[in-house]
Amino acid sequence: MNDLPPAQPYRDERGFTLIEVLFAATVCLVGLMAVISTFDSSRRLISAAERTEVVSQRAEREIEETISRPYDQVGLQLSPIPAHSTDPDHPDNRIATGGGQYQWRTSPSQYSALVMDGALEHSSDWSDDASRLSGTVYRYITYYNDPSLPGADDGRRVTVAVTVAGRRRAVTTTTIIRDGS
Image (cartoon, rainbow, N blue to C red; front, side, top):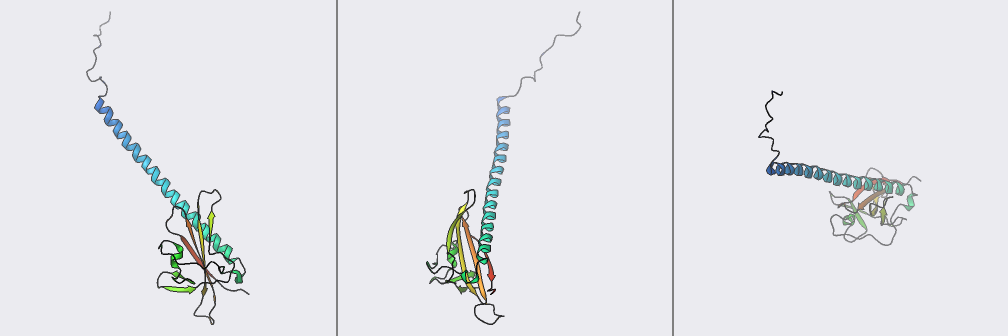
């Protein structure tokens, strides 16, 4: 014989109410949306950093290719002459309104004459090896005058501005070269 009383159901074993289930689902959904938003923001930041890195490397590559040429070829082709752009984000915005001069420094406003007797194109299109990124390379070659040296043409300033689709401003880099002959 069994001396145990018959089992009685507990009143609190009814399970979750519909309100509790909906609240738990809402909390989980809000948490999931926050995680997805974080991943999406991270992806956009990584894409922007990748574009900047690729464009910077492209600008450096263009500088290296330019300075590896013979000195008398380091200049822009005579035609077409680069023209001023009214768009403040466009690299050609730094060309003087009448053309023929380039402002490599924004402050103070100082223009230098463009070297127009060389072998370089003013602009050319580019794309990366995977064809995911593309843009335009702008070249500006100006005469450089070092006030501490005698003479007017002490070298040439090579400035390269590279644009990429999806980035508003160009990445610009510059260097000065001298005639080694």
